[in-house]
Image (cartoon, rainbow, N blue to C red; front, side, top):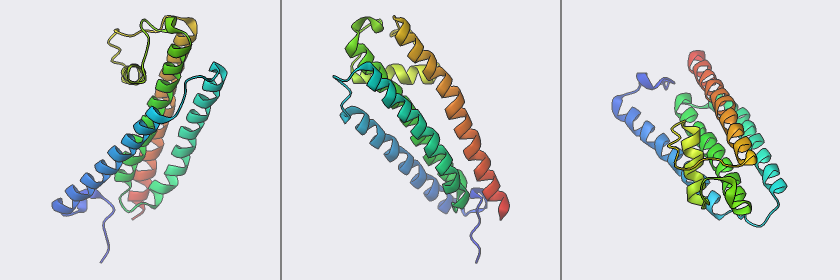
Length: 177
């Protein structure tokens, strides 16, 4: 008996169970990334080190996306794998910028309209990435604004390209069968 690759072709109960499992995996991945964000030490380093770490994080997001395309191409249900990978890519991108914001605020309290704790920095990075931007926290120095602009570009380019590439791979895998 051949297993269908398209979720629409599955019995509804099995489809719901697979979607719930994928959602749980995605949430666990996001949770793990957030826990790591809170526990990886960022305080006390030079800002140059933070920029290097941010660059490494962005390169990691790109590498994870490229490697994940193969994961999706081999997956039994590729669309579900796309959700899991994108949850991780988005969480890693946001937490990377939040870490840079938290350190910058620690290093220069005037960098933002208020001093940022790790939670405040995560909140600011998330509102920036979703383009909600409530305006309660804003970048005050040139360096902070450059970082925010960089996040905006990374959000559009990296996350957009990742989502498009992964969905293309999922469609390609589903169409092969």
